[in-house]
Image (cartoon, rainbow over the protein chains, first blue to last red):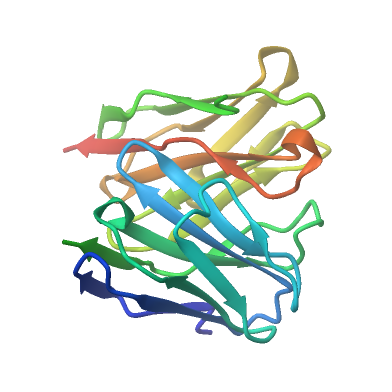
Length: 115
Length: 114
């Protein structure tokens, strides 16, 4: 079982460049999430999608956009990358945002460096 | 305001010793509580969760945690550490403000010495 797949695994960007991080899940989950992980900061929610066709801002949405392409795929776009966006990005999915027994399933992350 | 506090960014134990990783939360409603583990260069994996029912929860790899409402705590323990337990551990809480989306603590790195 693939679970949650993220691409690419690594990326280096120059300030001002754009890119899209891809995420796909094969567990038929309704809800999907994008987090960033920074040393000493834990995981912070960027955006989430409770179900296909909906997206909402999380704790740190500035500088990012998302697209819930279909039930399987949820992409994160950086329109104009900044050094402050250097981080490890994790995509996650859960059966249903509003179900109490819905733990998150995580991908292996994308390590992004902005120079 | 921080809703999940993990005491100690690093915890160091000897192989075979007790593991205790601390997590305290603040929530105005009964919380749902999770512990996740992150091995190097991997995503997070669920160790265990508390939603309702028995307050002592057993998870994978011999870990367990106890929900103590009076202390607003959900500490993670393992009787005997193994070298393979070295990883980053995250406590997460949901239902803060009514939302089921979990809020994560800052993580505790467990170091196991031979």
